[in-house]
Amino acid sequence: MKVLEGVRVVELASYLFVPAAGAILADWGADVIKIEHPERPDPQRTLVVADMSVGDAPFSALSQQTNRGKRSIGLNPGCEGGYALLGKLLATADVFLTNLLPDSRARMRVDVDEIRAMNPSIIYARGSGYGPVGAERNTPGFDGTTFWARGGAADNLTPGGALQPTPMRPALGDLPGSTSVAGAVAAALFHRERTGVAAVVDVSLLNVAVWGNSPAIIAAAMQGGPIQKTLREDNSNPATLAYRTADDRFVKLSLFQSDRYFAQLCQSVGVPGLAEDPRFVDSTARAANRRECVAALDAAFGRLSLAEVEQGLASLDGPWSVVQTTYEVSQDPQVVANEYLTQVEAEDGTYTIAASPWQFGETRYPLQAAPEHGADTDEILLELGLDYDEILAHKIAGAIN
Image (cartoon, one colour):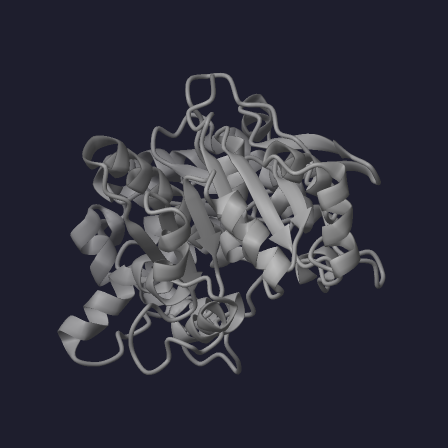
């Protein structure tokens, strides 16, 4: 039995951030019912992503990633018939999941009090850009603007003196944010089980950014201004940097206990005498002579191919890693062994998608493909007690697809 089997989630959300949380809950066994307008489905279905789509085709794998395992109902809550059906559906649910902004929730009559009137024990979970209070609570928030730009991630990852911020890739904030939403929903379900009280859950991309970039942000706050970005060659511990190999690959070291590992490192890359050099004999000396130490290690790594570096570092006790391409990650034996990537069979083909970052025991739950737009409308309404004549009448009225 899956950990959330028997839990029903009704999702009224679009794009990545909150729908990906619904996908995680579906992974865990919840019956997640995705509401999409009968004529205007989630824009994620038709999103073209630069460098990832083939030509002008939608990047359908991402829609599979964020909507796998759900059921889809084509429902228009904006008309009276559709709103009544929404009430019937929510009466059977444990969780209402949305990313509508406050003004939109009020206009559609799906704010907390209205949903609680339909089901007093429902957990109300909302994802937003900028949080539930403040002057910008109604401002739309997206991954690139809210998480990356405003939340400090771009500044945190842009080297000093760069001509522009480091570009971001899609969903770097959305997907970590979705794990926060899913975890909070699970906690709220546990709290309701213990106390009978249904919580309101709120997660914002700005809060996710502050949390994810908190070491730099809290340091800046304590210092009363932006933190200094140390040049690579001025790092006081050269054994924590990345080094380029002769064939233009990179290896990242994280040897924070440098006195423990430095001699091993030097032996591994063919310069054992470096560890005996008085300038580099211990961490204090290396910090005082950091530029010379970085230059010496640059030269050592630069004489070796990646294969030679990997062979040499294989016996190093401390943490290090090749800087892998995303394709190499998809083929990584450890990724494969743990089924961190899996395949789902959809009507239009087979898709590779990522598993959510939890598992229970050593066997992963199998994943199901995302539903087509409105694929489960009739099935869901029949479960709610409607007959085919009633369903047909709602179709004619435009309340459902």
